[in-house]
Image (cartoon, rainbow, N blue to C red; front, side, top):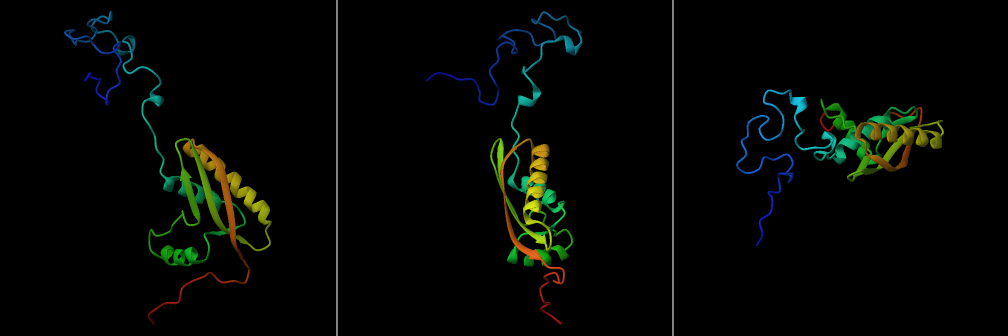
Length: 174
């Protein structure tokens, strides 16, 4: 069985001292002891941005998309039916407001896809609102995460009429 380098440290013989080499600054590197740090060879090599991995949770993308969608004129609410009913109750609890209601994201390593469910105000052009939501969500998600948004699917689940009252559950105790 052959020995391999430890997995948690990249193998780079150019930056590692050879066995038996003193580990004093500048020793064996051709750099005088006491030389400025900028004069020394860089350890690890390469661009710092490429050293490591960044992962973005689905919930992070959902929050960004939810906020961006709500900013569009003509979007009355996010989510549909039962989700909105529970949302009204949750909104009344301090810290309970859910910006991810009506948003579902699937996040990969470099791309994401989003499904949004919205309620529009009566009288607005649904096609125009959907286009504006799509543009705003794509711009916000791509700017903040660096992910490529491959699709934004929008389902209009309801229209808020001017004389409709907000859905609020009946109080159970009186």
